[in-house]
Length: 126
Image 1 (cartoon, one colour):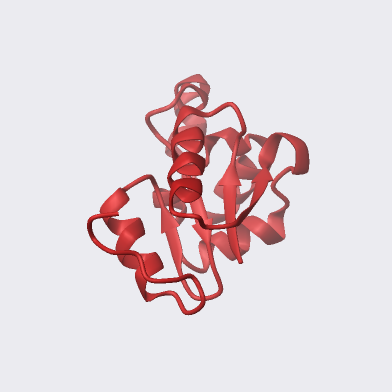
Image 2 (tube, rainbow, N blue to C red):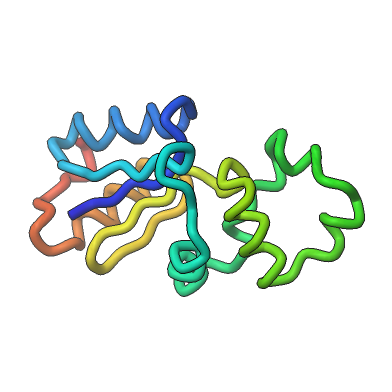
């Protein structure tokens, strides 16, 4: 099963959903706005990505943080930040049984899903 994490009204999530559907890949969507992002989920993300990779430093939520909050971030404060402001997590974040993908990159997604057992064979031209 593919799990897609993000926010429903995000353009990149919309593009990712369209890509998954166009490749006939079924997925479950975890909307941070509705389901939240509890600490155990953030810690699961941190098993695969660093907090520096997960925190979107180019978005509005990041710009709204104080300089002190930005400069004092460490793993524990990043976990709290991602729980409090899940919109600050880079999107999309995609999980299957054996792969994790962060960010929308068609080539990377093709390569990842082509190797995933049970997903199917995605050709490079799809």
